Length: 386
Image (cartoon, rainbow, N blue to C red; front, side):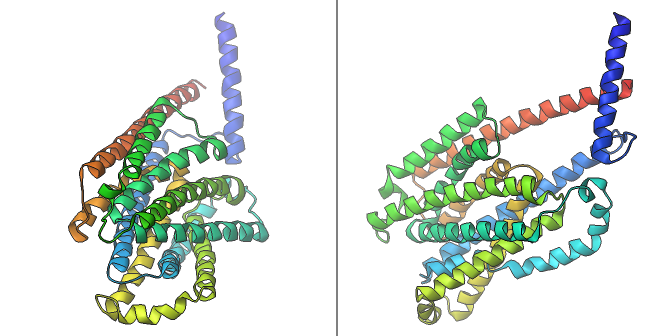
């Protein structure tokens, strides 16, 4: 029996060597014991940076968008336009990455052996995603116009529910008890806001009809945003197939260009551009503040988009959405301070439920990470025996 087990172990070792050789393009397996720790730390560092970009960019952009409407701005097309028009600022980090990081990434065999998608395929991909971004941005603009920023932010938490559904069908995401618990808590938080519009909106400035429109538009935008993340993850895996930071920046720039052009067409086709001059002159904080508000909205949304795509690239669309949801409770707190929104009992309960749903998902991610580490430990022991 001992000889049989030894033969079986040798066979497993040989198979492991063949798999490793196929991945590395070499006949000899590489030692992972010296590099695994550094790779793990590098991965967590990149995820932390992307998460910071997403949370900070999303929070500041949402608050500035509310400031734009609060001080007299009313153009939905302009509010949608600035969500993607800040892409020129990304050329600076893209150039830096191309100069300093491309030689390092291009030297790895895993990247050079993967065939790149054709230019037509990438063009079709970027156009499709860019148009979806523009349409989704318009829905968000309506939601932010007709809802208090605190209610708007809490409704955006539903994107995690939609993303879990899309991830299940598009990205083969597995559901667990903790994920189901997260979805249920987030759903309840939204229902609370839906059945109490008087407590969630300022009745002196927002009519019930507009509240319903804003509610529906924000929910639709959350669904569209979740679909966009799932399709982005699928694009990274099936079409782009490149593991570089420049890929994240290139996708963000390309889709933003398409979205910006789409918004420009809508801005001129609807005649909305004719009202911009009056909007500039009548803005509550002056013309300079009007321009700077729009500029910084554009910049911060691009910062957020890099964080979104980076987390999709490094982890998954659902993980990216979880981090995005984590940043949502920050906005209502600042909205109470800067815009004097009401933070009544319904909103507090909804916020706590949203946070509980987020914690439930993060705990599931922690369990998955522990399981993955145990699997890697077993693989390392088998390699040492080989």
